[in-house]
Structure formats: structure tokens, C-alpha cells
Amino acid sequence: MMNMIPRVQKEADHIFREIVKNHSSRIYNLALMKCNQVTLAEDISQETFIRVYKGLQNFRDESHIGTWIYRIALNVCHTMIKKESQLSSRMIPLEDRADIEPEELNSDVQDIFIKDVEKDQIREAVSALPPLQSDAITLYYLKEFQYTEVAEIMDIPLNTVKSHIRRAKANLKLILMEVYDET
Amino acid sequence: MRPNNSNKLDAIDALLENSWENPPAHFEQQLMVIPSQILLTQNRRLDQISLLLNSILMLWGTGMVLFFWTPLNGMLASLSQGVMGFSALSPQLLMHPIVGFIALTCLVLGWVWLDMEKHPGVTKI
Image 1 (cartoon, rainbow over the protein chains, first blue to last red):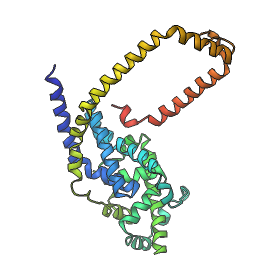
Image 2: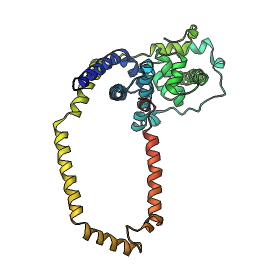
Image 3: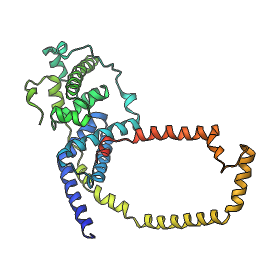
Image 4: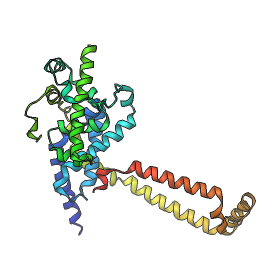
């Protein structure tokens, strides 16, 4: 029994190292997209991996480990961004413009202008989206998950995820056009 | 990987694709040492000493309460008799509005706290 503990510990450490190798960049980019601050994104990533490590020894459902990690990451993002209370002061006021369909904005001329926007402004725009849209588009952009997995992570129906992503893109286009007009 | 229905990338897709940032140097190494840091924190000798000292303190406290129970009991009883009009050990205490208010506040705060602490990622473990 005494030898069991170090072995389980060793296995957990090995799995943890694999998780860090495979997911650290994505978790960092998820956090950066959500908060648009390098230091906070690093803190969020660190806190996420601490929680992952602490939960790893009791985690059994290995087929869902990916969704489990990103669910933790999203929760840590929400908690830490709220704690920092910086997001609200930086946010561009935006209503959820649910009445606008993406197709209405899908002109090639707008697309050409939007391409000139800086990375920082993109992240600023994503963090200004309504939380569910921001979560959905960020997870989608990580290129790790199918829609069904995004739905599982966010714990919402599949069609709602698709709708959030569609609306997020439409809203992003609007925000970025405004950013382009200002510059 | 992302589903194939995004075969026609629009401007937003392209922007999101290009907004990828590489983590700072040594970021991965910082994360890799998390297990050893957690173990170090858990096994700190200071924590074990602190636990021992606290246990002694609690035992001493319990002993003191037991030793002085009779005068303490009398003091509490007379105090509550003076403030509320009945003994603190009486079942009437449960019906007192202040006690009810305190219990309700604790209950509501407990709910709020539980709700705040609820963590889907962690509850699934």
C-alpha cells in the first residue's frame, strides 16, 4: 500500500506533463483572448493547471479530459477576470445585437478593411462580446474542438453554440469596422 | 480539429487564425514545476509543527472550558436571562426572532457561497 501512493503520484505527474505539453499554448491563448492582458493570461493559465493537477488524481473519465481541462480554464477565466475588475472598465459598450444577421454584413469591401486590424484590437473586440459569444468563439478559434465538444464544455445545446458563434462573428465584424473607422 | 464546414474562411476567421500568440519563453517550464511546488507546500515541516501546536491549543482550550464550565454556565445563563429573559440553554432560544434572523442569514449566505464556489470543472471530478 505504501508503494502505491508514489506510483499513482508518478503517473499523475507524467499525465500532467503531457497535458502541459499539449494544451499550455491553447490555454494561454484562450485566456489571452478572454482578457487581453499577458500577465493575467499567464496567471489564469497557471491557476488552471494547478486545478487540473489537483483534480487529476481523482479524474477517471479520460475520454473527456480535454473538455474537462477547458471547462476548468473557462471557469478560471471568468473568476479571475471578474476578480481583477478590469474588464468592465476596458469594455467597449456593446448590446447583443441579436437582430442583425451575419449575412447582412458579409460584404467583401468590409472584409478587406477588417484585415488591417491589429491582434490586440481583435482580442479587445472578443473580450467586449457578450460572455457566451466570447466563450464560444474563443473555444472555436482554438481549433481543438468540434461544435459538440464546445457545447459540452459550455454546457449548452449544440444549436445554441452555433448561434453564438454566428452572432459573435457578426458582432466582431461590427466592432472591428468601428475600430477601423476610428483609426 | 475544427469542423470542415468552415471551408470558406471569411475575414473574421482569417483574423482569428492570425491572432495566435506564442506563450512567453519559460512559460511551459513554469507550468511543469507545479506538481513539485504543490507537494512542497503540502509537506512543509512548518505546517506539521503548526498543526501540532494548534492541536495542543485546542486541547488546552477544551480543558479550560470543561474546568470552568460551572461558573461559565452560570455566567451565560444570567447574561441571557438579563438580555432575553430566559436561559441560553432553554428551548425557547430557538423561537427568539434574533436567533431566527441569524440562522436565516447564515442559510442565505451559505447558499450564495455555495453558488459562488460551484465549479463545473471541479464538481465533475
